[in-house]
Image (cartoon, rainbow, N blue to C red):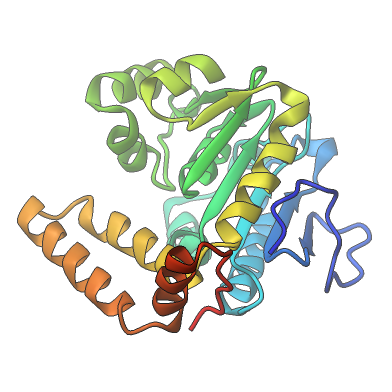
Length: 273
């Protein structure tokens, strides 16, 4: 598979004119998912959340997709939840929305996901980025969990994923003050994988996704599964999971092809089998 960062060439992209979510599937195994509510700074309305949920359900099941890039565009990633849709809600209504079910297809997606973040990633936007496996941020990006300022708290993993990413003391500062941090500070905390010039973020994310998509997909999925399953397990249990997953990969044709290609000093051809 090619590793270039050329513009997306859609293989199957249904008519999405006016949609709050745009999905393009490239011929290099990469799917580009772009939130498209510029008039509302990509606020995560119930409709946009449902579209994200459905898109990730489809992409997870599509064997032609091997890596996913999630972005909000070059101005803003997502500036939090849709406050107008929350202001009058009661606790039972919030419970019945079952956001954990809506976000599950992103959380459980077996394909590697790269977040390409420019501009604000606030509240639910920061939580959405933390659902991804790699976060590439523009120099002008910023991250925050400002929920405390309106009398609530993060409800889509912000208190849990954040502390696992940056540690208790950094997490508490963000959660209790609601103040944003820059992309560079987020990288130093461990929240961001890499900081790039704003106009290079998406191209680099697509390039990285193409590189990952060219790897044996079963190995990529096993790596992701073991990392996520092992992070909250004891070291002994996590190492056992790692050994078993590695042993399983020796039953794949891609393992045979990869090692044979290495010995023969040629480029491997991975099939995902």
